[in-house]
Every structure is written in structure tokens, then in C-alpha cells.
Length: 164
Image (cartoon, rainbow, N blue to C red; front, side, top):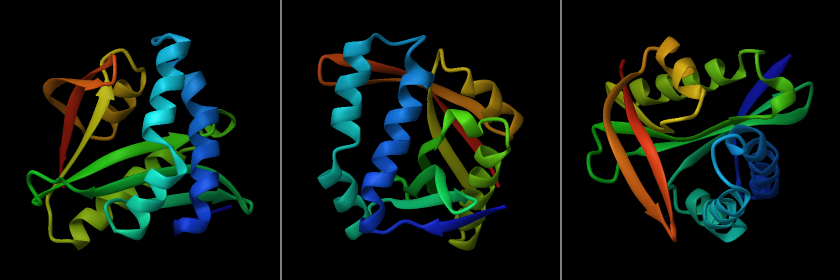
């Protein structure tokens, strides 16, 4: 049994905990420990997430399984092109992977995108992340490659798009 709710500032620590537990498993095989630590510190500080929620910069969805938060996604219109929505984050606790929660959250974000009158959902995925195959199964296709500097590190990503 699961439910999805829109996260509030009261959920910031929950989001951070899910990210911390998920990132090590997801990125451990492809990034070094120092880079994972740095990126978690850069992307998931409490004040940054709080600001994103309070100022509607990103909408966070939390998925609960039997009353416990186990996954989250965040999305927003793209800054450069409001006709495209971007799925910024999608993480499910490792113990829940394979239960379909990632698919459920993507479908929820896709519906929110359609409800906003938009027809394209976009995301970035590390070129070496196994999630690329999952996103392809969900109907996303590689649009282009993008290298993004985060401090002294690089995110080497595919930008993937799905027409809705």
C-alpha cells in the first residue's frame, strides 16, 4: 500500500535521508567517495531544499509505503524553456527498488506535466548509471549529452526526453 504526497518544508530531513541512503548505492560503483560526499553536500543541504520548496522552485513528491517514506521525486518547469518540465530527482530506497515506485513517481510527474498543459518531460542521467535503461523503458530517449561542472567534479549526463 502506498500514497504520494507533495512534500513541505517539514519533509526536508526525510528527503535528505532518502538521498543519502540511495546515492551511495546508486553512485558508489561509478563515482569516487569524495565526489559522492561533495555532491550530496552541494545538492542536498537542508536550506537549499527548503528554499526550493518554499519558493516553488521545485515540487517534491514523497512516496510512502505502509506509512513510511521510501522514495521521492522533484520536478519543475525548465528555467530556459517553461514548455518543458524537468524531472530533477528520482530516488527510491534500495530496499524498495523493483517494487515499481520509480515508475509510479515518473507517471505522477508526467501527469502533473500534462495537467500544466505541457507535452515534454526531460531528465538528466549519468551516462554510466544503470537507471538509463529504466528511463528508456519508461519512454525516454536520449536527446543529447551534457557535462555539468559541480565544484571540482563533472556530471557526465545524458539529457533524456519523453513526449507526453
